[in-house]
Each structure stands twice: as C-alpha cells, then as structure tokens.
Length: 110
Length: 230
Image (cartoon, rainbow over all chains, first blue to last red; front, side, top):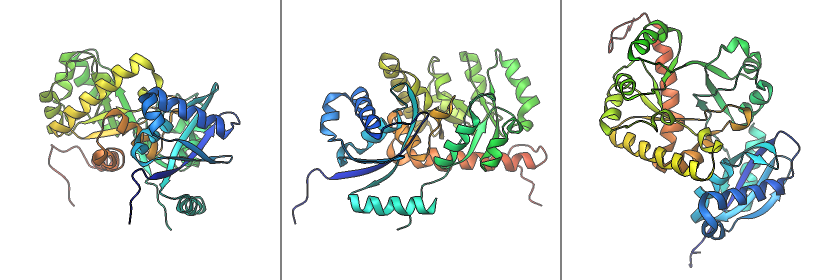
C-alpha cells in the first residue's frame, strides 16, 4: 500500500485571552509567530490551515514534519492585537475524527 | 478513548502578591498545573487554596558575596522547600555549585558567566538542578532572542553531558505567561532540550525534587546520606 510522504497532523489548541478574542485572529498570530521564529521557508512547508474555531478551542492542521515547530509557535504566541493570551496545544491526532473523539473525552473528563 | 495530560509542578511562578491571582488560579486549573513554586507566602493568596493548587515555598537568593550566600543558606534552608541561587560572579558560581543546600541554578543567571562543564559536573555531584525558565524566551524578540536561545542551548548541552538534571519551569511574572505541560514541552524543545529528555525535565524531575525536599523538611537535620527510617 502506498504511504503518503507528508502526513497531516491535527492540533487542538485551548486558548483564553484577557479580552474576548476571535479564533481566526489567534490563528493569524500563530502563523506570524511561526514565520518570526523559523522563517518563511518553514512557515510555507508547515502547511498550516485553520480547520475549526469555537469560543475556547482552535483546530489547526499542519504537516507532520513540522509539528514541533508549530507547537513552539503556538506556545510562544502570548499577545494578539494588544490583548494578552494563553494558547496551549492540548491534543494532536492524525485524523480530524480521532481528534474530535479525544477532545470530547478530554473535555468530558475535565 | 481515555486522554490524559500530565499534571505538572511549575517550580517558578513569580507573579507579585498584588497581581491578578484570580486569573492566575483560573489559568492554572485550565492548564492542569498541580503545584507551583512561589517566592511568596501562600497565605497571601487564598484563591490558590480554593483552586486546590499545591504551593511549594521557594526562595530566590541573589547574594553579593560567598559569605552572604553561606550565611543565608545556614539560616534559611530549613524554612523553604526550594532554594535557587542567582550567582552574579565567577566566585559565587564556584561556591554555589559546591553547596548541596542549593536546589536550583537558573540558566538565565548563568548566561553572562563563564560556565564550564566542570562547574556543571560539580553541581550534578551536589544534586543541584539547572532550571530553564521558558518565560524568558517569550519576553524578548529578534537579536536578543537569538542570543538567549543560543546561550540556553549551549548550557543545556553542557548540563546533559555533565549529568546535571534539568528542570523546566515557566518563570511567569503575569498570569498570561503561565504554561501547561504541552507549552512547557514545546518551549523546552525550542530552548534545545532533546525530545527524549523533555518528559524527565518537565514532569518527573520537578516532582522528584519537591517530594525529596518535603521529606527532608519533615525529618530532623541529619548529615548527608543519613535518613531516619523509624
């Protein structure tokens, strides 16, 4: 069976800001942080996409080769448009379906 | 599908007593932090007790001379669960790495000093840990961050080669600098800790240090290596 060269990873990011914040703005800040930390080349290869946003959780997709880079960019994003924010990459999965199952289990268990 | 995120001890949180502790307690619960090392009296912050966060009494020493360091350690060791020393000179560094009453040497304090592998090997023999505070990475940008990351990765490599244990803490000065397990892991990787050592530095070593020091404080003062069994 052929194996995909670049596999995808889905990340759930828990976030809380000092003011109400749109998830899409946080995603842009993460993209900017990724570029600032690792450069435009890595940012382009990481294939970062916003999959889903709600009030406190962001779902992001990236290439499995740059998972650590993306996690570091998320952890170092602490300010979005003058508002302080904490963003924690809580879960990683290979498919969106398992990520949702894990997220449901985690939030129910909390 | 059971998912568990490890609950960590963040051994250095330096939010001032008059800071926003309500938000801090909320975030610590959200980020699943079990306990924090605090250079404050926990009685000043009742919100932490309500949020069931374990408080580890910590002392940050910034001595001006070796004599002052020795005197402070003799006087204060049994009153604090954690003692970290910020050496400001080569003499203080040499004295600090030989004193087993010290628990932590913060990496940011060592960046301006000439730290050799022999210093860190001596520290490892005296059960002193290197503390990497990740908030320092968040506070700077550009050239400053490049220098900081280069310095941290050099120290981390030296510590790993010298057998000195590493502890990763947030070093947060405001609630929005707090980190959970995954953020600490991501920033530790950025600082240069290899992936295979990350769990040890974030989860196991801080827990071990708190447990050992709490056990020591419960016992009467005994010479090194002697433990009261019964």
